[in-house]
Image: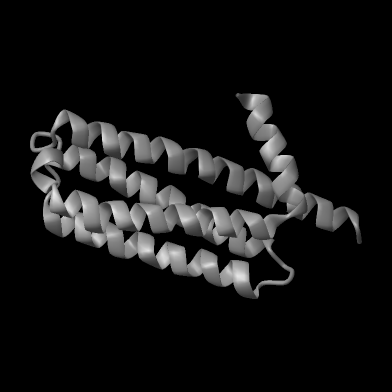
Length: 143
């Protein structure tokens, strides 16, 4: 698994624009699952509808940010990768905190969904930070 992720990091260091596309699509999927699916079936999850709404709005902003970076950035990727990586990390922390706060209300399916989401976004964060670090190192070696 580690070599697989390292290969992804190597590939994305050469094409950081793709990282923003992946992040944007992931955030879009999160937005749709939170706003459309989980809000509709919130009884099966246990998370309050208002929390699901706020999380979906936040992920929609992440989607727009990453899409804008994908479409408009031509260079100087590193600061923008750090921004979305940090935002995604804070999203994971916030989601984990919400799971703890609402744990008594959450169903097993709800806990599984949110912990799964945290794991997936956590892997993306790891990749984003590693790509930003590698890209920064590569850029500084060229000067």
